[in-house]
Length: 179
Image (cartoon, rainbow, N blue to C red; front, top):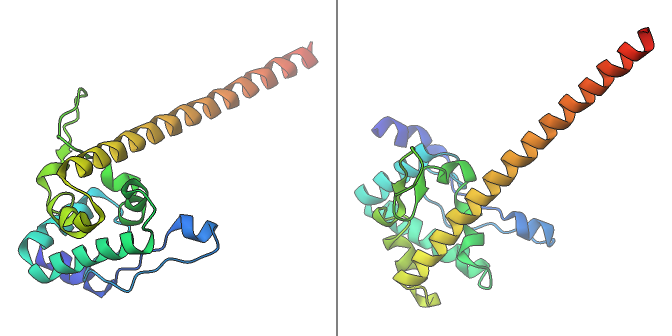
């Protein structure tokens, strides 16, 4: 575990918002979290951040300051929109607020993670975010993510079907030409 933290220690946090780039401005935050590069790419990085935040007060303070900076840079943006600067879709696939699902895959409960609960409440309490508001926002984030993945799956399936239809038509045409 320690080697993973040391190996990643050369990375500095650099958060760039896609929304800001589209609007012509570039968001970067001076705050860093030693050993982590945001957005986190997968659930292993999320687990490592959680373990490090719990074990190291300095890392916890750096993460809270990063959260504050994100909100300060985009005060009118919803927390759900800020999440894309912190976590990739793939990093959040294994999580939901309560950890329960009606599918066979068990999810991890975000409410049990300091990085999703205590740190966010501490960072954003001045913005009027309380436990209930945070719960609603995290639930909305996971709902959006699931919708996005379903849509991506439907589009992928539709594209595959379109290719198959084209190939079948092409074969029928070649067969027609040979008769």
